[in-house]
Structure formats: structure tokens, C-alpha cells
Length: 444
Image 1 (cartoon, rainbow, N blue to C red):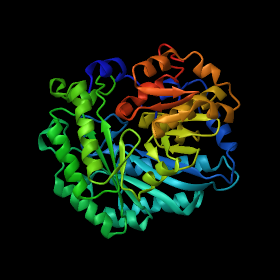
Image 2 (image 1 turned 60 degrees about the vertical axis):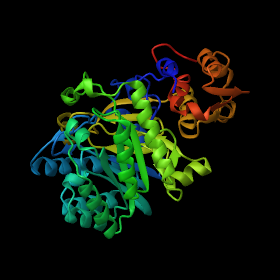
Image 3 (image 1 turned 180 degrees about the vertical axis):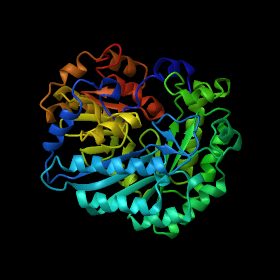
Image 4 (image 1 turned 30 degrees about the horizontal axis):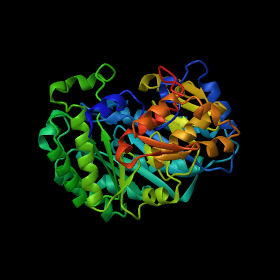
């Protein structure tokens, strides 16, 4: 892998384009009023997805970049659930009838710190406020270190049908470096227990670029994970931003791999997973051939959202909990990040929205182009523009960055159809960035 190409295009500051525009462009000027209006305008017969951010963990993982609260007690979690139910009520009150739901995801934090009976009650409450489809995908993120038999029983009783297990690395040296010591046996026991209770769709999260990580340890982690045969694996690159996340200051920066080493680790893990029979999905997901992600990719309907790659076809997402991001018809909304601010607004009878972004027609066109690049590594720019009634010349006629990418052999472009070369797919974000109007210097 050429270091010069990495230095030129593989900028760690480029967004991952899970959404576009990115959160950095959200405004604090409108707030809850916009959320109410946008919720009220949702078509009552169109399915939505629901995302719940449960912000509690027991120990702190030094690499973590998410909003979370550390608690050894259950009382803060119970108090949070009271607020969360009120938020569900506030959202449901904005629409004339229960909205149909096809996808529910509980993220965190560690959602499974919610006691089993409380989780069942939460799901029962949710089903009274929304019309959950009988085939709805209900997914929960799990920390195997705190997972129990009772948790598995509770999830199954609540209708959960997909589990996402945080693994990151099986290397004990790396685990100690990030304050997340988790044995292979703990993870394997959680997988077996889930499957015994009928939760057979299993995802793993792995990370490369961690302190003291090597290509060998990355491959060994992938090999160990494959032996448990999860349906999907997400392989993310660690983002070290200690100025933004104070817990990351506990990580030894001298032990972090450099950019070429990170690229080697990512490639080695991808090769190991593909050799084991997994299909690569976009930049960083891998799935068995019969998994929904692989089928969605094959059919050309793979999506990209704030959680990564998805087979969910919903265009609307309602977010609950602190920091949660929603995507409504008119634009994006984000709840207050801190638990205190979030709870205060909900208790006062207001939606917890602290930021929003109203999408323009041009935003929608750029978002559609970026999503297809991130999902398919190719995009028909004129076709997308025509669909939206937009002139493609404004994107392709001034594309100096596109010309540079083509000249360097990163991509091919013919009559507005762009295809990222297979050997340079790791640079797809650089191609997508050519359509990002909000970077420091507009590239298109």
C-alpha cells in the first residue's frame, strides 16, 4: 500500500458519512419546536425505525467515543427508564395514531444493564405506543462481561431477535491497554446462551488501530471470532480524539499504530474474514452470504445510517435517550447529549431536542450520492440528480477533486458514472468527500 496515497487521501479528519450532512453542521437555533412539527408531518402509514440510546456502563473503556455514564448502582438506570417512558409518550402524542415500526435498536452504553423484568416492561410499553410489526428486527447491544442467563431469558421474552456483542480485541495485551479485559470464554458463553434462547442472529464489533495491536493479533482476533460464527462483524478503526473524549487520555499514544500499520491491520482482518466465507459489506462490515446485509447488498438496497450499514429500508428514524439522533422527513434532530439536560427537558414536558438540521434539496442529492458511494463503491450521479430534479453539471462540471482522484487512479468516471477501483476502496471516503459541501474548502 503506497504511503504517498495514504498521506494524500486517507485523512483521519474525513467523516465516515454515516449521515450527511454530519452532526457538525447541526444547529441549536430551533430545537424541540422543529421536532414536534416534523413528527406531526410524518405519514401515519409509513414505517419508521426506533433507536434508543441507553447511556450506562459499569466500567469505563478507555477507547470509547460514545456518550455514557458510569454507574455501579441500578437506581440511576431505573430513574432513567421513567424519563425514557415519558419521552416515548411525548413523541407518540405528536401523531394521531401509533406509527408502524419495522426496526428497533437499543444502543449504548450497555442496554443489558437494564434488569430483565424492567426491559420486558419497557418493550410492553413501547408496543402500546407504537405499532411494532410482527417481523420487526429488535436488536440490542451487549457487553459479554456483564451478561447473564437471566438477561438472555429477559431479552428473548421481550422479543429481541438480534444481539450485537462488543468484542473489540481478544488480545489480552490490547485489552489491558484499553481497560476492557474480556475473555474468549465470556464471549463464547454469551453467544451460546443467546442461541439457546432463540436469539440466533449475532453480530460482533471488532476494532483495529488500538494500542499495542499488531497485524498478527488482529488476525488472531478475527480467527477467534469466526470460530463462534457470528452472522455479521463490524470492523472499525479506532478514532483517537483525546481533546474531545477525556477517557482516551488514559491510552498510551506511543503504543498506537501509525497510519500504514492501521491500513495493514484493516486489510489483514478483511482478508481473514473473507477467507472464512464472509462477504465484505461496504467499507467495514462483513456478513455471511445469507444474512440480510449480504442480501441487501446483492439487491442494491444496502443503506447507510448512524449505526453503520443496514438492510433497513426505512427513511425515518426516531431517536430516544441522551445524544440520540433521529432522521425525520424534513431533516435531522439530536437530543441533548448530557443525561441531566436530557432528563430536565423531558421532565418539563418538552422533547429533548437540542440540535437539528433542515435538509435542502441539494443536501438530499449530495446525501444520496454519498450513500451509494459508501454502499456500492459506485454511483450514477446524473441518474440521482434527475430523480431529484437537480442539474448534475453543478456537481460534475466543477469537480476538481474528482479529476484529481481520477488522475491518481483512485476512481474512474465516465459520463457522470463514478466507480471506485477495487484496489482503492479503502479510500472511498475521499471520493465521497468530493461531494461534501461543508468541508473546510468546498471540493465540488
